[in-house]
Image 1 (spheres, rainbow, N blue to C red):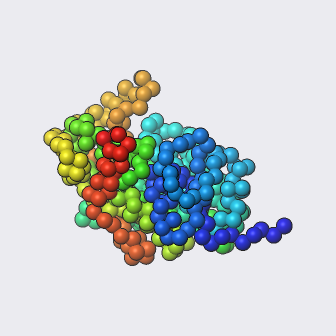
Image 2 (cartoon, helix red, strand yellow):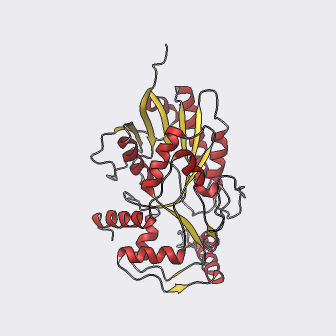
Image 3 (cartoon, one colour):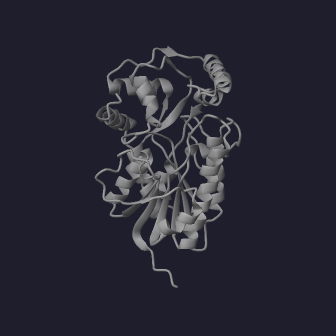
Length: 334
């Protein structure tokens, strides 16, 4: 039997009720797309309430169920991933971040899906300095920080890009650290909550590239529409030290910023203690040694390629922090 032509406006969105997914669903709808939201069975977080989306509930681990969800779909945006950093080495994370992503892409190709947009991470490339931020050409040093999250996301990116071609277009979007609304877990917003509640005693000597999740969502839609097949696009925002970022969060939330600027040696010692204690108790540490190492470095990235090729635009990250603050307040979390 001949397969029906896919609907060019129908997009299958995995993880549609997650932090990025919920913002991305709204961005897709605003661009006139129809969204088939692939959701985990039994999960109810309310981030899609009131949206005109078609819901498909299935376990991504169930490969036999994938063809039904892919029927009639022209494009797929894959946001689902485990972002856990504890334990730092976890085979289950590889299974979700690599094996499931690859199985989904193969099923999509078989179903006649024409474009597959994979949401990776900017950490799949070497970071840079504020003066010379990292970009898509930066080499990846596998195992440098000892985190399966980063290593598995890079591995997934490489394996998926190998599938690009023969009518199946693969594009990778690589976001940086995001703030914004609909962070129900919370994920990255936990940092904002801890600073706003005065639970962070001081700032590490490093920094990050902080982005508004709504800009990232718009950038992913642009990658869907205009991204060059086989290419990656870093979607970032402002490069700030942790001292600067915490001061901005505190000012936006009406609280006091952390007073201390912690030396790298103290941060690393705290991380080593956290990892050792977690190994004994089985409880996730507040800060592990790999995370302490990262926090002592500048994880700075630029988005020049996405700006030039996708028309990616970035608002001040303070707007994303304010939107996150308002979201948490409406949920009684702040």
